[in-house]
Length: 255
Image 1: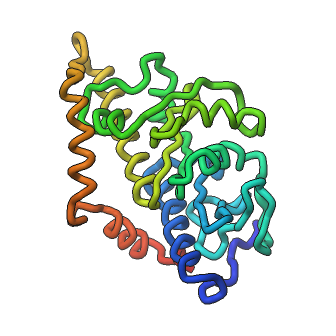
Image 2 (image 1 turned 180 degrees about the vertical axis):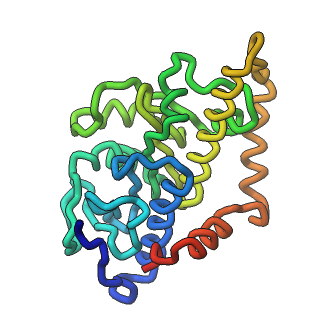
């Protein structure tokens, strides 16, 4: 059955790296909590200085801890000692984002059913809800399915689709990539798009006529709303509460 226990690295790595490890482990734990998990096939990665942190292969997201994260370089070579392996080919789509975007300190890639269902729709995410409006204003791109993405030669096309300013990519017929300067940004973008996709599927199943699309001037105004929210005092930030919830459920993510 195997043992996923791993000796604590707290005090053995820099304080900055340890904080990044805890934040990244929190992302791993939140994905199954939200129901976005696909066994161990989805991905989370984080930038730690000149290196990157990824999950150990064969370990479920609910088992990942701050110390069990594996440090690799941009090429996917393992830097830190670990009894766990890394599926190097799975690193390519994450590498594509980190390499193209210096602001992408955290990246989440999921295969959630609700998001994947919308990703199979030719029209993609429709501007019919407030979460969708925020997602579109925040920079939402699309990437056509080219087959299994675990090939190095497919990274340039993904980077072109991502562009310089988009913060999320719906992978057609596949899933979603979101990035963030902080862990909470990558998570909240994923959550917001998941919410928008859920609303869209419910609206489609219940409709008795055309769906009401938000007019373009209103969509344009959501860019200003994002700026206003970003300048707030943080009292509406759900991230600390999510960390407290994880700590109540199972504090081992901080080990």
